[in-house]
Length: 134
Image 1 (cartoon, rainbow, N blue to C red):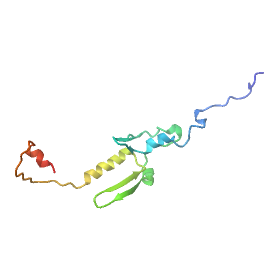
Image 2: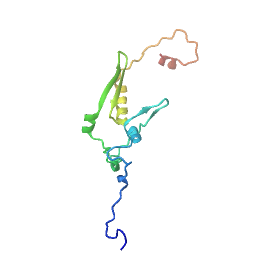
Image 3: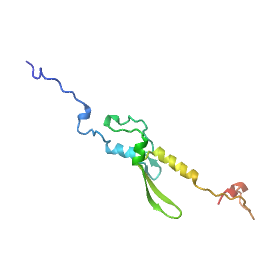
Image 4: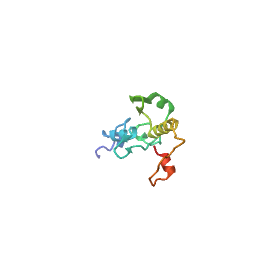
């Protein structure tokens, strides 16, 4: 009789391997998913994966839910003075953070100069262009 003839073959899954984490992403993917890094030339990791099943095979729920957002989102003020404010928005998608940025820019009051008197203009810059400069 052949060895193991009466034994049932054990099913093997790739997720049983010790190097595949369940319930958490590998560190490099978690960093890309949760952080926008500002480099010298441009920000990186600004794209977002909106598909809720993107990490389902690893046991991660990537869905967007209002209750999770409202429980986890927070704003930490880094620096505040008369002229400016620096803050961190934590646990927020890059696209939503960009929406907040656009809202803040739209709501800031602006100032415009209505009348400009040029006494002696000797440059080749047109009057209209010069009037729009500070």
